[in-house]
Image (cartoon, rainbow over all chains, first blue to last red):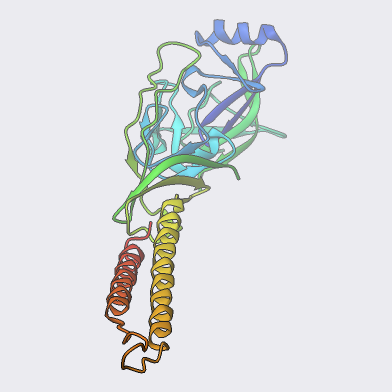
Length: 154
Length: 147
């Protein structure tokens, strides 16, 4: 499954239908179709805009914003999707968590298959910043995730 | 960059979006409640924003704009201007009538023309002037409360 996390928003692009089934068995999490990808329930049908105080998902938005994709709104508000609570939360919620990626030849290797955005990350024990997103390949057979890129929050 | 347009209101320079109905979610369980009218801080008002108004709120990137529906202002303004012009026309007609009367050039004596009197015309002119003043006051009031 190709996984694209942008500004705390998860999009999964399976190479086959069976990958979604494997994903469900592996993580005990359902994925739902949205546009041309699959995503978590809590990220379904999010608006592409936010207004201060008006719930974005279930979390009151912090800024007025209109963008092209819900991930743009999440970036503007400093939100990430929490895999733990299945809610959209401020990225700072995970500031105390950290993850260290191993630098491979053409990829970063993650110690976890699904990585929570908002945590502090390092590559080869060198701190890089707060994780906003990543692109990679989640191999449900090998049960490993290979990241082709990682993105820090600005 | 996309934008979002919502119905809104403005009162005393405070812009708010109108209440939104609950959104229908394809799957049950996720709360999507109706939301009440909410202020839009830092919205740029593309109007005078003095009088209370309805209009639209546009979210564009990190910017928010409010465009009031000023058609009411425009209609009222035009009505006041038409009323004022009507009164001016009435006054001019009365002035013309008075001059015509004066131009009768009374000669006096038996069988001559009646001595003209313009009192009624002057009264009508004064009335028209008062109406024009009233229309001007209404326009000034409107100017101070434009949406």
